[in-house]
Length: 148
Image 1 (cartoon, rainbow, N blue to C red):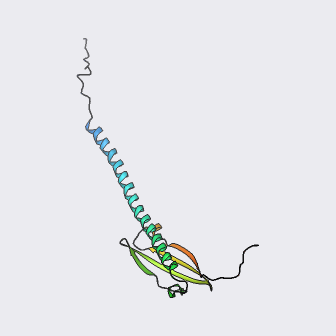
Image 2 (tube, one colour; image 1 turned 90 degrees about the vertical axis):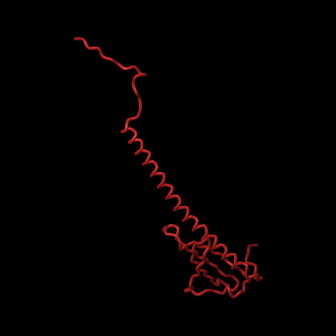
Image 3 (spheres, rainbow, N blue to C red; image 1 turned 180 degrees about the vertical axis):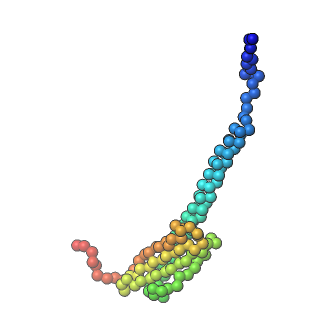
């Protein structure tokens, strides 16, 4: 007995995806999509924290500029006690705790320090205090201490 094998030509075979191949491809695409969604959520969270820190720096700079524009003997520039209660500032719908410390370094020099802490953020790295310091001198003439 002689059997003949019938082979199908390329035109007669049907090439395509099986249900299993399609399911595996869908699972791989779903894992990739979930990874992209997780990265997106992480980026949004960190951008919000960065925004809080940038606004905290801006609040500190505004307060420093306000104090620098006052005359040297203005009562707002008097030395502050160590236990001053911080104020709360709202900027862009977010709250910030502002602590101002003024120290009379000498009779004609004051050190001004502004500390701003974001209160609305939940990330540990973004609620750290931002600190800006400056020195304010009186316009008085004194002895020349420079070189030759």
